[in-house]
Image (cartoon, rainbow, N blue to C red):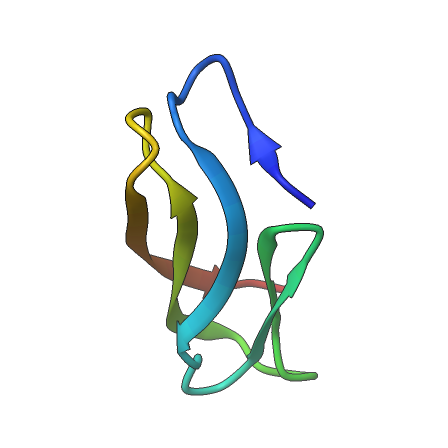
Length: 73
């Protein structure tokens, strides 16, 4: 599956979790990173994922994004 947007001039072909969260779980569904909190946990957590694909010139691209999450009940 490839993800492309008029807003961003690149094509995403893969998404990988590159830093696991300390408390919850992170995974990938349909080229999107998702986070699931540990049952009963409240507080801060963070994880990082990489978008892998081709840039607007057809060359390889890898962008790493770090997400900070605040879990509330």
